[in-house]
Length: 385
Image (cartoon, rainbow, N blue to C red; front, side):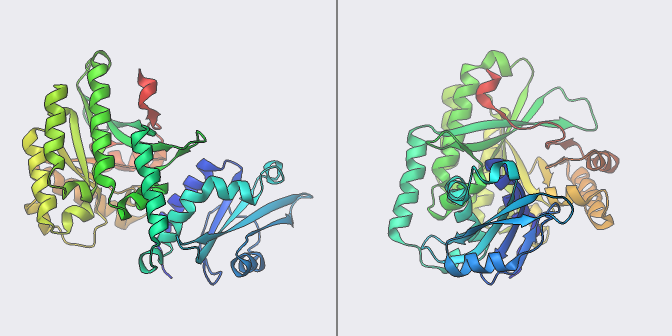
């Protein structure tokens, strides 16, 4: 099985966010073969423990003697299951020894359950496995209840200018889910299920409505300087014939200027050739909103579709950004994107900037804007009050 390492790396980052006691991660397929492991995975690859967990379906905990120190390190293996319970892989987690005995496999499984279900889809078999109507009904009820109970939360991450002084402030709007136990879940743990159940239009509407209500109630805060809020929009919402009309209605009722919103559309959605997606992008532009092509530069399709879609920004994919300081191909690709954008009158934004070397490379290449943990972490919208 061949899976993009950056996808599994993203899962590893979410695992660490949900379980701080996890110090190393690896993922394995149903045969026990290692698909991805973190760079700090210093423990020996005890395939026996992984294979036993896959065979008995119960997972396991082991203490491993360190070869370098006179101490013990703990490992938890959790089977990764499809919605119908079939095992399709395993997550192997190295634990901080101070936390290992107090927080065993059952507590970890409970905390990571939504993420492990999404990971099962990424391991490549959920799409081919029959989904149970009971499981679908349960997940739909959970997401719909979260919408009804207003348990989704908005976060903002700043977008910084790199080349010119900028009069407007810019943020990307990010989504989180507050669970009944008060834990906060990253979008990768629930958006996959929401998309499968075709609930993304409802979620995207909630994001637009909630953001505009907040802007309406806090004009004094965000109107000190012109501010642009970049909102991710799903292909399901774009192809919903009522979504753009809903955005227009919300803008009219709130009297928020449309130029305060920039809708980010995944490049693969725009490059798919779906006329509904293109029409929605033009209609959003006609409202006065900006449009950005997200995850730009990694689509397998050619660039001919750019003749047919509006775009104010190309948001360069994080995989190119992270490779730019050391990979001349990635460096050349970003350079090409910048030159093409300039000739088209489009500005460029680099996402997922985490290192000074990445930022230096982006400045040298002439990228217009950047965002990432190096420049500012996401902050809850409520904290801006």
